[in-house]
Length: 233
Length: 114
Image 1 (spheres, rainbow over the protein chains, first blue to last red):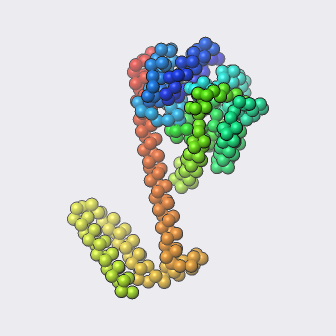
Image 2 (cartoon, rainbow over the protein chains, first blue to last red):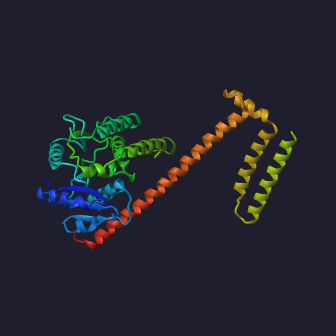
Image 3 (spheres, chains in turn brown, cyan):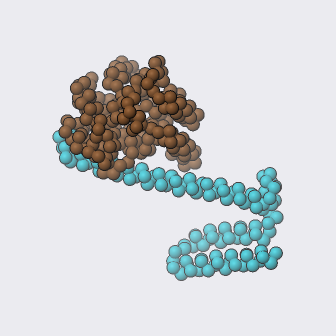
């Protein structure tokens, strides 16, 4: 079951934690790990090269969304791939949640499973400012795109290879997190949200989305919607 | 009225000068000249007979002809800015595609077994 699952992990200046994340995956029997080194300026590349993983090096930094798409496109070219997981490089996701998602997709007819921090037990350790911002972003996306999701900006997703290219983001930066739910809706894919927990550490919070980023998400989302209206994208 | 005549004459001289210069340089095509003549004619008519613009303004419920002209200009400029933005986005997408293809090819060349 784990042999046909590919992890797609975009990494930009993650030398401090990427080794730990890869170790954790390898120790739990996940062998197919695609790391996209998105033009890191630190020694992320050197750290990852020590591990038996697929390391794709972007020549120039293009953003998390571009990194995800590179990983997804590479995974789709492989014959041994059946499922793809998008996973954050800062080590904030739990492998127990991936296991749950894998079991769910194998036993049910879903195309994509999305992690959510806001169903069932909410993350107690989530900072209040982050909680408000995420709730606001989710409500905003619901108004703009009409998506019925509880947590639109969760990096943990598991999906079938067949539908991977339909949801591969075209937006390079972090706004891809808003684009993916829109692509799911556009492609009429069968999706479900799975409760997940996020490990908030000082490091993950410093690397994560800032309040100003949410404002940029709003701006880009409106521009994206206008693009669809006026230029039929 | 004198100011209007001076302004209109100066404007026409500048436009004719620019057009003739660009025709000599082979920059403007016949189609470009045709479009320029139409735009210039419409604007000239509005400048000489501002009441026509006011008539249209009243039709759509806007008081003055100049206001109507300003509103239309804002919308047209907004549209062009948006179009420029999306052309820029398309360029960005193309750069990412190129970067992606190079990255995957480099990896596949280094690891032919994979």
